[in-house]
Length: 484
Ligand SMILES: *Cc1c(COP(=O)(O)O)cnc(C)c1O
Image 1 (cartoon, rainbow, N blue to C red):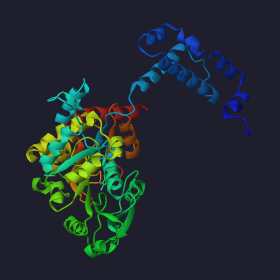
Image 2 (image 1 turned 120 degrees about the vertical axis):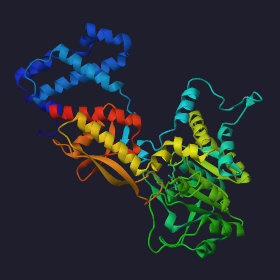
Image 3 (image 1 turned 90 degrees about the horizontal axis):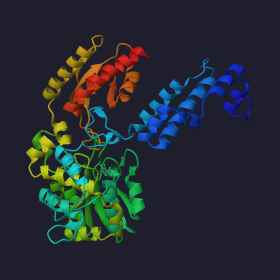
Image 4 (image 1 turned 180 degrees about the horizontal axis):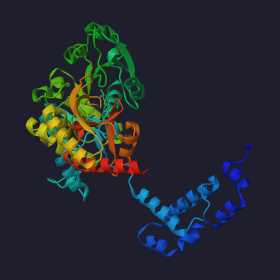
């Protein structure tokens, strides 16, 4: 190619007279705007959207002519059809509902916890008009937004006081900034975590102005390590739940009880970042074990923090619980204002927390908990039904019900494999990868797991309503593929 000349210009220079004629025959946007059909569109759609769609249609036709792919003049109907398709694509939201067939219950990429019906109803109600966000209905005076959930959090966990911020990263930063800026925080080397994306504890520590005092080794930390690290500039001992990994083998970690005892002996604060945070003993309900908020407080942690949208099954937020005097200091930190949660979050959180007054209610109605608790028998029964429906719809394809291993995800229950059941499918015409891509293209995109070049639909994360749409979407993905 000739250097220094843009590609389009280069192509233009080497065009046949016929192609040049084709280019000249393309209408302009303003000419298309005069077309009767386009005038109709303008009654219901913003002019800017229509213009952009017309431009896109003309551009794509021009591109084809330049590539030499078209010998016939592009007619108006063809351009209108392309513009209409562009308008349609623009009307599909970018952030939209998907079907999670990966089996990962807390999938950060897919929005972590799906909300309970109670929370969804509460949001719909609260978002439909005004609400008593910072208004005390008893006195008619200005109120505080977090009060709506503080009482429930205290009742459920036995904490003295509570507050809520945007996420657990903010909770951690706020705690460090309030109590340890310019001072040292002692953390075990085995707990200097990084969580997918952008959360690294040492970086958060640095941003808060606190300095990290690492103790112990990656696999073993003892009480004496914490004790030896304490000096005049120490502010806090912190335990961090290693959310997404598990140190196994020759290991030793110090329980929060012992960390708190050392902290208190030296008049320091003990903080427990629980990550996910279970609001009751999950193991008792057949769920995998995860550190319990109430137990951590009872063991002496002065402050605990955890996410609202991991195991708890609520909206994205960070919850801080602990001693009243400390919570008062946190609440009066000016940074608190920058992390304040939105009304929809508080509405959803309050509705979610209400289920926790009775653990039976929680495991039945909080989706994260009920999905994690579903037995393999129950999953297998649903898998057989799904496989039958898929085979009925697609007689040339074979679907198998198999046991498999999944994970909770979202930095919860690290290393704990979850036995699960999947419907496995090796598409007869195509690779699993290309079929997975077709499924992501469905009206409600389906996100699957691929194992051994097979598509796996994991029943653990598929709701009843997901299953209804799934069969139709899979069928059309196969048919479209066959046509293409
Ligand atoms: C997930 C996690 C965080 C970050 O929480 P977000 O709510 O995602 O901000 C912090 N600490 C631990 C231990 C975690 O597991």
